[in-house]
Length: 74
Image 1 (cartoon, rainbow, N blue to C red):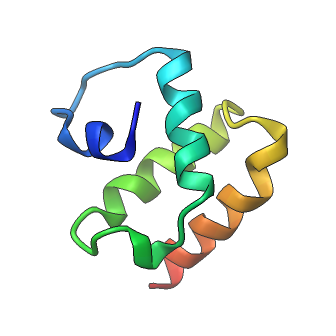
Image 2 (image 1 turned 30 degrees about the vertical axis):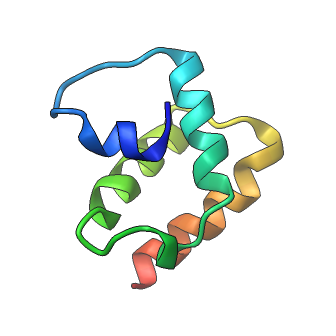
């Protein structure tokens, strides 16, 4: 799943682990400035849940943590 597909989902829609992994990898390559200000809270909420559920692959956790920090700061 791409970031744009995620942002187009209606609330409450679930998606597969493979979709989440693809989304996480895309987000790991982004900075907060790459995400529209109107979408940042939605992305932040998703990332916080993904990290809490330990569903982010180990090799990208540091990049996701950086993005979370950037989103929370901004």
